[in-house]
Length: 355
Ligand SMILES: Cc1cc2nc3c(=O)[nH]c(=O)nc-3n(C[C@H](O)[C@H](O)[C@H](O)COP(=O)(O)OP(=O)(O)OC[C@H]3O[C@@H](n4cnc5c(N)ncnc54)[C@H](O)[C@@H]3O)c2cc1C
Image (cartoon, rainbow, N blue to C red; front, side, top):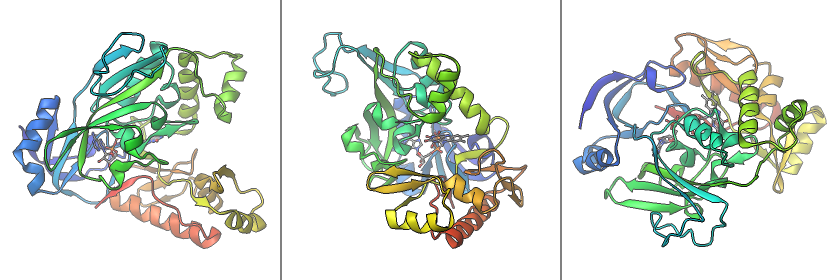
């Protein structure tokens, strides 16, 4: 096991923040992860699992072990019309219909590469989720979502190792307790498991989710009435390219804040002064567009130090050149304070701040 010391994390986070880690360990096989857990290194030091670093902001140097999963590739793929004795990692697939395909992929794989590969095979399920930066292993942790689809809609199970014991456990979809950008791995099992692979249940028959307005608009402009997964993925890539920064060119962590959820009476109160407030029903409550709230406070396109609010999308904070994590946090805090004093709503950060 190769432990690197005092290493820059600049290339390991999409914000491009030049924080240092006192220790850095990478493995590219499941065996490598088992050896790391057997070594006890994570029992004696603070640690952080760092996938693509696309939802993280290093506010300071990290004094502990950065664990970087780099195990890649599809592990197994099986069509559900193939006879099997329910031996798919213990997962009971006997009740699945014949048009389903189970694909298990290693956690260190690049999420978008995997989503595009499945889409190109003609499988439905991941086409709305192409171009989301980061790793496969983080997808269930974050329950990534975009354009009307979330990872939870297609995850069959998650395989993860318990850090304390080194034991492998299979979490069914239900056991993952998925919520909005949330899962059991961010709550009661936070820092207790490392995801080693994720199994997706995809579909060979048309199962497109195209009701998200921006997506249906582009499809109809292109005259595509019955889209293939590839049609949808291409439209999604086009839409994302217009308003989100590409991490290769501009450092960011994507949407920096969650869309806040408010009650009907809170919404009515806001509507008295701001009748045009953007809101969507969310169960018996309402989701407000955080980007709209930020823009209304005059932050869109502004900078504070070397951190800024992306001119094309106010929900995204970006690196305006050599910015530090502390500058990003200062900007985020200033925005939160303004939104709260104007609308009475406290924004919650979607990006994870590492202190
Ligand atoms: C330009 C841009 C656009 C984005 N668009 C979207 C979007 O449309 N939808 C969306 O949901 N998100 C979006 N994001 C956020 C981000 O891509 C996702 O949160 C992604 O899942 C993070 O993956 P990662 O590998 O980079 O995770 P990291 O940022 O490295 O880690 C995120 C969390 O997952 C944990 N983790 C990572 N890997 C593992 C593992 N193997 N085992 C256990 N825990 C692990 C980490 O410890 C941390 O808690 C965007 C980000 C950017 C920069």
